[in-house]
Image (cartoon, rainbow, N blue to C red; front, side, top):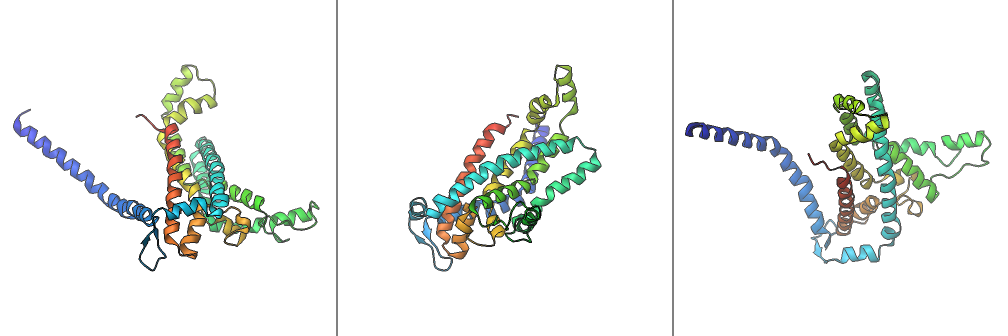
Length: 306
């Protein structure tokens, strides 16, 4: 290769390099402004007292100290409720999303598309709209669908207050959370299953693969680790970011006995009801740390070496 060809080759690489930045630039700018910058601002505000009107006043670690030593609502309700909700809804919804995606992948295309839309639609409606449907189901009077059936069948003599009992509120909330967990992660896993190379399955059966279970364990999941990882991230973010579901079900904020009261609910209460933005920022930082911990755990299982 002569000198002129080397110069032209370098110009082409430079042009390609610059074009890549040109396409990724708009998204990178939006991400830096609306994600990275806001996280940084929230982190800085967590060390201040800020009421949304006056200038923030630096108070050091006081918000974090109060959070873990004085805020009983956080330590006794919001934190354990969030962890329990995430550990139940996250894994169960994730496994259910993979199972349903695998089942749909076995169907003909026309039925698969309709079924995928039906399963995906609850995640589009939002927790508040979903809760309207389930609030009618579990209403504490005779007009509630569940109570109506129980009374007509003679199982109970009076309506049960499903949405006033601490235990049943949380159970209903988990059920609704799982029901609405078929979101983007579900579609990503469906796409990963459909795009797995079919030749690998044929070769595996020639080499001694015996059943569909082994097919899923040894071929399907390893072949779609990026989609599995994406689904895990979306499940983690979705469960920890849940807010307002218990309040929408019960019609009260805070909920009776703080049932189903999550960190996101606690954060919104301090930010928009009590106008303690600094304290709410410390709650958001703690929530972010929890999400990152679960992310690293998921990354350990589904990271790809490719």
